Image 1 (cartoon, rainbow, N blue to C red):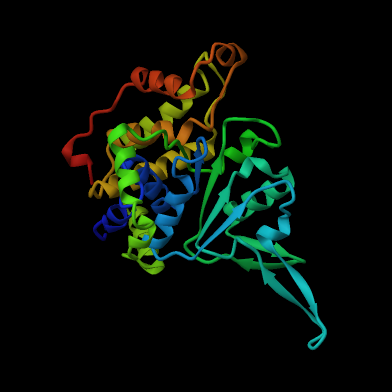
Image 2: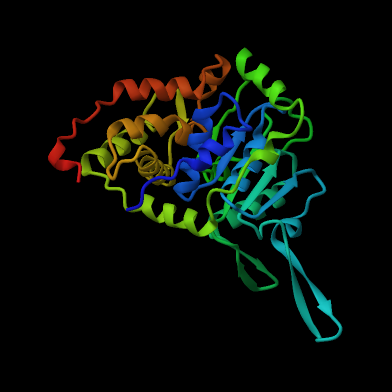
Length: 315
């Protein structure tokens, strides 16, 4: 198994200041073969993060600003009749790239959302009965603005489940805000990002993640955590089996990023809230009392016993 290459993180930190944990979590999700939902207010760097990742990792990049007039064909493509050949030629849509930024995915209609989410799940598009695979690796980073419901079509729970993690950028602290201004006095820091990875190398890293050893104790631990969400009094809808698998894959990616060939319970704890916060639905009383999903998940982390892994069971 190869050694984790930290150079992409170092490059992305040139443009995303003071958000090292968010950068690492997004990279973990990519290494785990998943997609990312960035849910936050405008202007905190969600689009810049996606651009920085695409440049540092050498991924072809496309951005779609989701509005009510965006059609499914804009995502998957369409066919045009060719008079010279008498056949229909396929014109690729935005999904034909390595990294697709779906900006404000909640501001388009459900049919277009469904077209995007199908590509995320299947890894290919079907147009007029013909299937076309998307390039590999393929990652969707979608953004969603939680403020202001006018003109929005929120993703239902079944579609939110397709994203491996949800992250929030949050406001920068004072020192980081000052540095952001200073860095942009002369030039856009995005121009300083160098490509330090190729798509082929990224695919190899994704393959390395699948080789990370996860003991039966750790598998049982992450399963019990997810099962606890189905029984917790504040939660109406718990984590699905797809969510359990996502937690398993993110746990392996977390261990890999830390330079280990085996997963530990602390890896599960580190990514649990990121994987599960958008997969649970709080009951009416909890929503009325403004209970946060993350707080409920933190309570579960405290209640479920952490297994002790002996050294001879790490591999």
